Image: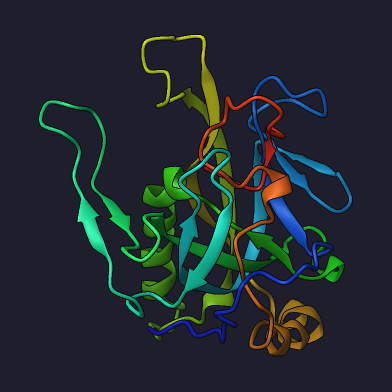
Length: 241
């Protein structure tokens, strides 16, 4: 099942008033860690939030090699040539995609346009995980593509609501310090089928908007960069991973 959503592959617009599901990291003063927060209203939804996905899209995100590793460009996947940089023998880490023209790291990420199942009239809210949540994202993507209705027919992406859960896990940047934890998107469960009334009154009117929205990673001032422990970094993150 192909999930479509047109994306503008330009640099991020200056607009920052879109709502994002942000992840509250430890050591923040705004709320409890490992809980979801609305970046516009500051409403906290707790460790699990129920959403109705409308669309999702893969994007290649290029980040500056200098801290705090801000996003410098975005590309449609496989639209540019990259080379793979492997860790040194015996070193920890994973292969990285590198843009040869800049030397910057490139990550393949996903962006989701959703409605809050408990408040769908609030409009579209974005989920913009970074690489640490990719395993859970890929599992969710597979479930969205193969979900079925009771009739056996393929279900559209918005046919069901889903529970997205956060947890506190070891900070991979400091594996030997067991007191260093980060919040991460760890579980996703199918919840309820979307009722016909909810679809026609709320979901369907929002679908047209997802075809024209520039679905980008969350703005950097929501913490959308690599090092959670960088000084002066806002740890209430739109990273979600």
